[in-house]
Amino acid sequence: MSEKMTVPLLDLKAQYATIKAEIAAALEEVLETQWFIMGPKIVELEKAIAEYCQTKFAVGCASGSDAILLALMANDVGPDSEIICPSYTFFATAGSISILGARPVWVDIDPVTYNMDPELTRKVAQQCTNLKAIMPVHLYGQAADLDAFLKIGQEFNVPIIEDAAQAIGTRDRSGTPAGSRGQIGCFSFFPTKNLGGYGDGGIVTTNDEALAESMSILRVHGSKPKYHHHVRGINARLDALQAAILLVKLKHLDSWHDQRRGNAQSYNRLFHDAGATSSATPLSGGGFPLRTPHQLEPPAKHIFNQYVIRVPGEIRDSLREHLREAGVGTEIYYPIPLHLQKCYADAGGREGDLPESELAAKETLALPIYPELTSQQIEYVAGTTISYISQHAAVCTS
Ligand SMILES: *Cc1c(COP(=O)(O)O)cnc(C)c1O
Image 1 (tube, rainbow, N blue to C red):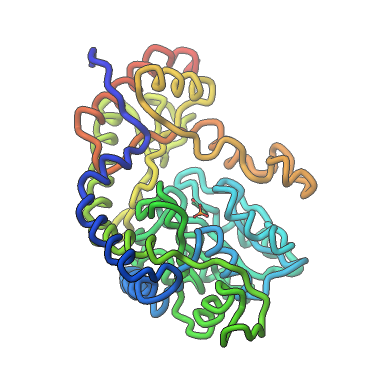
Image 2: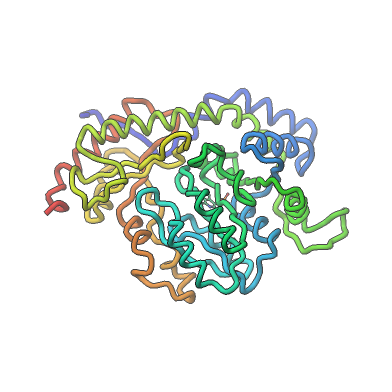
C-alpha cells in the first residue's frame, strides 16, 4: 500500500493497445473505399447490434442523444407532450425531450439500484394529462425494472423507451438484453461507454418495422426518396469510420464485460472484508460506512459501465480529493439532479422534491472499473478508500 500508483478513472490507451492492429485494418478498409456516409459498414453494424441485442432492427445514428431524439420524434412527441424520466441521470435523457418542446416529468429513484422507481412512476403517470412515453434509464449498466415498467406502459397505453446508453449487453431480471423489450432502445457509442467509438455515435433498436423505417428516414433529414421530404427530419447519421471501429470492438465486448464484472467482484470482496455491505442496506443501517453496488440476481447481468460506491455525504468530496492526491481518478455521476439544474428552474423543481435522487447525488462516487485494471490497482484503490474512511468514520457514525 505504500507505493503510490496511478489509476485513471478510465484508461482507453490500455484498451487501444490490445486492438491496435485490428483497428488499423478496419480503418484502412474504409479509407480505401472513401465511402464515409451511410453505406455497407453502417448496415453491417446495424445487423450486428440488432443480433447482439436480440431485436429485429437497429438504426445507427450520430449519438446517444440523437438516438433518444429519434425515438421521441418517431412517436410524434412535441410541444405539450409529457415524458416520464428520472432526474438522477445524464442530462441527455431529459435534454432530448426538452429540445422537442416536450416536458420531462421527473420520478425519483429506488435507492438500492439507483434506477427509476416503478411505483412512483405509476403515481406520477396518474397525474399526467398528455403522457406520451415512459423512459427508464438503465443507470451505470444495471437494468431498470422492465417488467414493472412494461406493465405500467400498458396501463397508461404509452410506450416504454429505454435509455440504454450505458447498458449495451445488460440483461434485465428476465435475462433479456436491454433495449429489446421496450418499444425502442437507445444506445450511445460515446468513448466512455462499454462499447465506445473514437468519437460520437449511437444506435436505436426496435422490433417494430414501421418505427425502424421512420427513424431511418428521420436521421437523414426526413428524406426518402432523396430530396423528397414527407417528414421534417434531422442530420443524425453515424460515420462509416465509427461503424468500422465499433464492429472490431463489438467482438471483444463480452470479454470486456466479464473483466469489468470480475473487477467489481474484487472490489466487493475487499470492501465487504472491511465490513461494508451492499446498497441493499441504507447507509443509516450501520456497519462500515461504505455501500457497494447492489447487483440483481442472475439471469440479470450488470455490465458495470460504472462501479459506484456510496459513502456518507460529509466525507464524499474529501474522500474524492484524497483519492485524487493518491493518484486515483474518480467521478461523481451525477452531482446535481436534473430537476435542480438551472436550465430547468422554470419547470418548478425544488430541493426536497426527489429525496432519493438528491441524497444519491451527495453520497455516490464512481471508482475506476475499466477492463484492463490490474489486481494491484484494484487493491490500491480499495485500500486507499478503506483507510481514509476508517480514519474519518468517527465524523459520520457519531
Ligand atoms: C451517454 C448517455 C446519453 C447520451 O449519449 P451521447 O452519445 O453522449 O449523446 C444519454 N443517456 C445516458 C444515460 C447516458 O449515459
